[in-house]
Image (cartoon, rainbow, N blue to C red; front, top):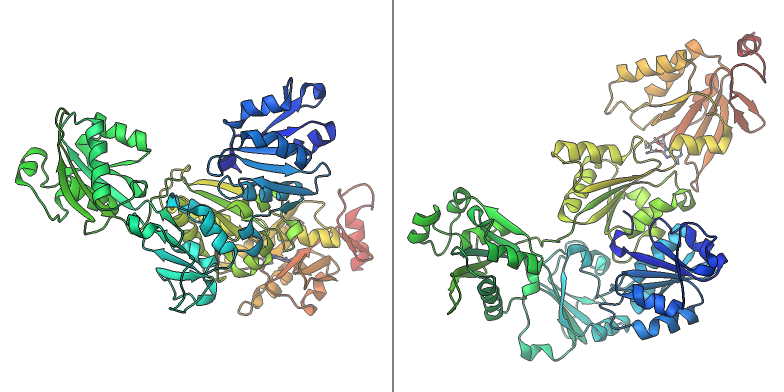
Length: 631
Ligand code: SAH
């Protein structure tokens, strides 16, 4: 579901005009109205004061959308606010529906994002007043969210304000994805995948940082935490390998993890998950630890563990479970690396049953803990206002946007400062599909954009084919398609109603389809009198196909058959030519053009192309006209 990250959302209004404004949000939220407005459908009703009612909703909702005066909202929420790290997102829409204000919990609660998404949905302007949003700066308290990083210790307010005030802030990143850096250090060139850099950009070594951002699985020593103000993001890269005796208590395992982390200055929130041997998959204490900490448990067979080189193999363990190492080998396997951050340590505690062995390895890539989504989005022929609101929300809300550079440029206004944007050249469709799947499998919400409709000679097909080839289960990552206005519809809309009767689309590109197949379809379409849209009619290297197509049509259709040649529909360089089948080749046709060939009843009227709805009735007998016009 779109906006799932904000669910549940409560939308609140107190007048019937305001209630109507909220109707379009009924699919994504529960609409609450006073019981004096029960005539409105698709809503819930509260009795008594809104203040009391709001208090009852406050802790169970992640977002609130008010269609109410801002002043009233401020008074209502003031007594309920606690801290920006826990408060729900609060968004206000004005009664006229012109503005969507991100009022509270802009970053961490996601109100900025929610305001933008709702603004797209209802065609309003989002109002964001957070310092970072205005300047296109990274919002330090949300940069790690797409990757599942955990916020660690730090003075978030001071570091954010240093960034907002353009003071030199040093970033020290020793783990986790560097994709977020794209928007921050784009001026420094792509080879600069640095682990240390400055915001704003600077190469100078002599600056004194006014704030620091650490992205690391480690904790800083206490002494260095004082000055300058700093924050810690912890990517979940640590895999904790655990071996334990039967019935080892949850508490002992917890204590062991805490102690090892403390001793090695590792953040517990940087733990990706727990790894062990498969025969421990039902070990109660281990399962409790995983549930408590919301960690995945990865298990490996003794065969796999035995094949891993470890620093401290044990003959006793080998005799017992068939592998000389459980903790070390499992940590290395889970992290998919060859050396450990912490070699194995054994813990026992007086009065507690069992013993536990712990080792830690650090993975190259963090575990996001998120389920990825692929949003296959059609962006229509060109202009922004030709994209459906649902597709706009999908693009703006995605963690990453992937597409052919021309289309990425066309949708640039929808992109967000913290989004990962990967524009690839037109030739690399398959790579684009694979990249999108890779990011989604990792846990990101990825929008793959295609012009027109994504499922019509677009990227959606490639993504689904590729998923199938990879043995996809049909569910994870989840896939959603967002229909777009395809070229034939856009072209038709510019010239009238050429598609009023049965029509078909044929692509003249023989890169992926043998020409014999295309020829067969052209012949069938021409013979059966389909109005025909030709996609990919001509490229710089493919020039013959269009002429062949025309000669096929001329065998079955009158030379005077109206033809529309529409180039770059709804883009700045749009060109429209109405002509006839026999003169088609006089007009230049290229890869940005769609050719619409009328059926035997299609006619022109002024600058319009009209295909009658029926073959009988108004307009007379078509056979008669065909004969009349060809004589
Ligand atoms: N998925 C796209 C089609 C991609 S194939 C869609 O549904 O529209 C590319 C072909 O689409 C181009 O060669 C051209 O024939 C047609 N096309 C795409 N955008 C167009 C536009 N704005 N105006 C005219 N034709 C267009």
